[in-house]
Length: 203
Image (cartoon, rainbow, N blue to C red; front, side, top):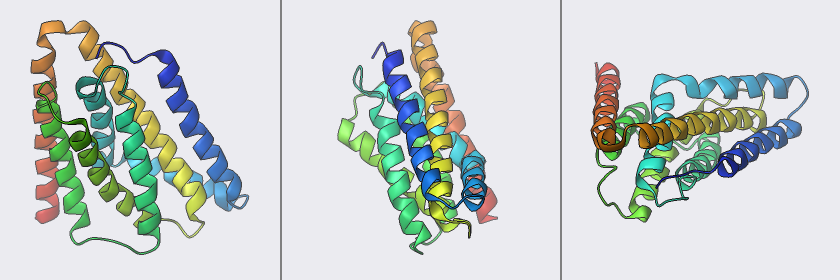
């Protein structure tokens, strides 16, 4: 895949911004602003941040030409749906450990990005990992309400995805023959980071 057009990037950013605005509009004045800010900050935890950047890089590197937006869109949809479940009290055992392992998974997906993988399988893995992150987001919904909080973490997530897409495009454009090696190195580093995060939780 050679190009993700500026129009598609703009559309993704616009969709995310509209999601944030519509969610914030449903929240109470003052309380909505507070919950929005909490949502904007929440995805900057290292495990969430690494996973969301990785989705963007992987989408450019592994999905069909012109379809890189499928990865971020899948992640965002699974994220908000599972966050609503998390806010309602749904959870799974060892959730934080599973999130750390999702970082390992995304690292492995980057290592294998140059090898053929069924699109449905790749997007299914993205959705499954996103659901774990969403449950964690939802479980930490502030008392000020879910709508503004969800708008915040959705917007931050979209921005991180776009950053990952930008990295993926730069790798594709400038590194040529070394692209596979660089993706492999990034994937290995990401997987190692996930293992460290898992080890910290298990200690």
